[in-house]
Length: 272
Image 1: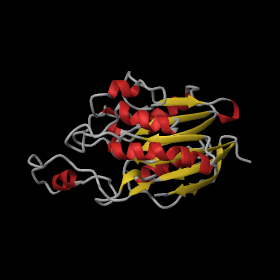
Image 2 (image 1 turned 45 degrees about the vertical axis):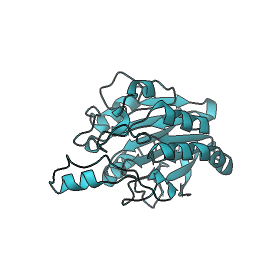
Image 3 (image 1 turned 180 degrees about the vertical axis):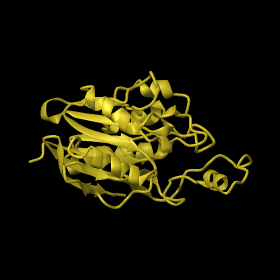
Image 4 (image 1 turned 60 degrees about the horizontal axis):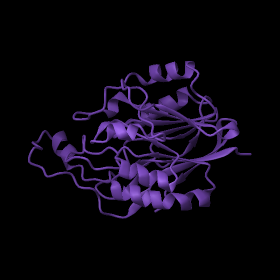
């Protein structure tokens, strides 16, 4: 018998997507009988002309998501983009990557009480911080996790948002903590993986949740031409500001049924 049901949502891409998701969350909570909703919103705002450092969150997007019912809002390498980093980190619902040298904000958040207690941990892979990113350099993932686990800060049911571009890294981490946490969800690449796994020890695992936003441009939700030209070694200085996609909305998410701190069932939610 489940004690709680948690929905985790992949990267929200753009202000329109934040407003769209915020408006949909009450319906989703009622339809799926959700106890908690965890949303990655590091791409919710457009704060600059370059995709490397022009995303982030502002109070407008956070307010829309929280008003809709997001209980915890996680981040990643774009958490340091834009002019409202300090204000965003100050929200009680916001979690930024734990394994960085940063005095503002928090990398762990515990909400609820009794058998509904949920702890959300946000981790950032060093490989996800590319050239031009404003995020501080992350420390080793496993070292950060070990220190946290030994520090007594993990209470109740634990869900980890691992922001990484490597499916293997996410799989290895989930295997290393199998049986210790209820769920490990991967974010960062925006293009969701198909399978939702229930590992032998009771940890639910999704390698990449995907995104909440408009489709287009190979699943990113924005035109990757700056990255494409850079990959080819071409000059990107004359490119215009990056553009968000204009296709249909998509929702990349997963729902975990949890009992006694472990997952009993995990399913994909890819509603449009």
